[in-house]
Each structure stands twice: as C-alpha cells, then as structure tokens.
Length: 197
Image (cartoon, rainbow, N blue to C red; front, side, top):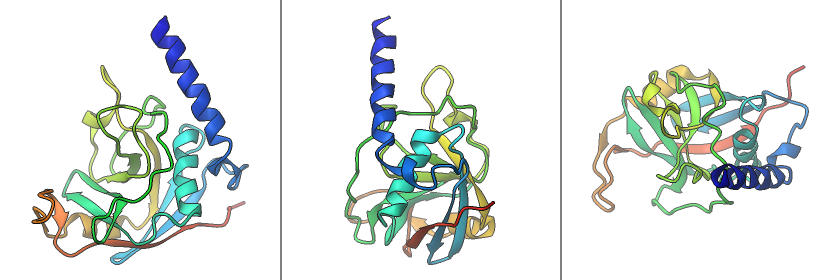
C-alpha cells in the first residue's frame, strides 16, 4: 500500500510538472510530429500523446528549447538501437531538465522504427536521451520489471535510420564506450512540424 501511495504521489507531481512544459505546445494535437535533420538525412517522428503524454511533452520541450541541436547519436548497434540526444560532438553531457515518470506500461511496444526513452537502472530516470528501435525488441517492453517507454514512431526517414544503424562503430578511445560511430552522426536541427488538420 505504501508503494502505491508513493507511486501515485510521484505520478501526480510529474503530471503537474508536465502541465508547465511541452503540454502547451500544440495542446490539442494528440500526435505531434517532429523533424530531426541529421548529417545523414531527415527523420520525421510522430509522437503518441494519447498513450505517452508525459514522455511526449518532455520530448517536445527539448525540441522547443532547441536542446537536441548539435547533439550526436552516440550509441549505434545494428539490428538493435540507435541512441542519442544526450551529448555534443565532444561528448559533453547536455543539460537535463529533470527526470520523468516511466510510461512503459502504456501498451506501446518496442517495435521496429519506434522511438523510446533511454534511462538508467532507476525506471524513472529518463531525461533527454532517446533511442530508435532497429528491430522488434520485446526484451525492452515491461514485464516483471519496468521497460522502456515508447512514445512514438518514425513516420518518414526509415531509410535514413537504416543508414545510421549501418555506420562503422568502435570503442571510443577517450571514454572507453563501445558502439560509438567512427564518424559522428549529428542532429543538426530538430523542429516541431505544423499541426495537420
């Protein structure tokens, strides 16, 4: 019972916080679209506010603040994920505007070409990093443990993601991270597209 009370209090605080951020961006649009212009081409994602309102609004806030511009896809694993949004080209950690409640139980699955939030071991530690699923990844869905919250899907640019997923990677000599692209793949610009009627 105590766990349920704590969870409900946390969720309520996150909903209140969400009301002061990306929820004001196209507030009547349940499926806003965002274009990511990368050094390898453009990707358009359609967000799912109906099932993942907290996560979608969080992502929209970062886009609106231009916080994803000049960040990199720092983790690329062919047939698994393409992850980015958290570091610039020099691997400087970018500012996080807080963490959000994990909406992984919303019914959306980590299927191919979906977009989901990256996080630490703490299930509610997602901030700004996101990833694209490059195959169906049921191991990332919730089960006995928290999964990873899917909050949209790729509407255009699957071929661009396929190219990114196929880039040569290595273990970065400075940080010792694996699966880092040899040639940086950069998000040059992120734009909220006009609402479609």
